[in-house]
Length: 254
Image (cartoon, rainbow, N blue to C red; front, side):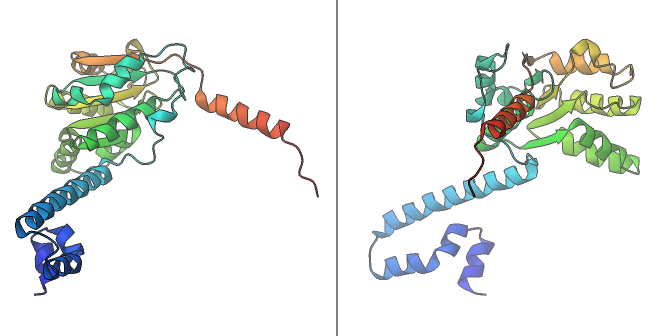
């Protein structure tokens, strides 16, 4: 077996990718042997950490996300920026706390949740991002009890689970029961973020008055930061600005 392949089998990825460079430095005595080994260990650890982060990012299914630095904090009529900044530290994940981000459509709830999720991944946590509808459809597609239980573990296991857009679509009682099982199993064992356009008193509407909705809210909010955003839609604002820009744009000379 080639040395390069052996290094890959040992998961020494950095050395495998830079083998010729290191062999040349050894040949030229460019490094003190002890310093060279120390430097190599540091590079391997950095490479391992980077690969781990990339793997967690891939499995999180976050998709595209605007950076929180682009968020217009002056736009909302009501928003607790300090609470969001605190969530961005991801300390809440260490203590298995939850968060609910509530507000009308188009005010940045998903953007904020994705940035918190990205911060958690950078901090070494395992994260899964899903919409409420995708979660329910995924679980409903399982054809046996055993398959369903295996699939439930996908949502119960991560350090941080983000359930986006709860309340936009209606679900049956079984969907509410499955969501309750996830929240219940994660209770004080993992952190959950839910984004929603509904007040808690209205959560029974999309789940058609399912009995499990009340205990679901009780478990979710027991140790939870609730952030309310009161604002007009950013998308409507941006669309209006684009229309104004086009209207004011001077015609191109021919």
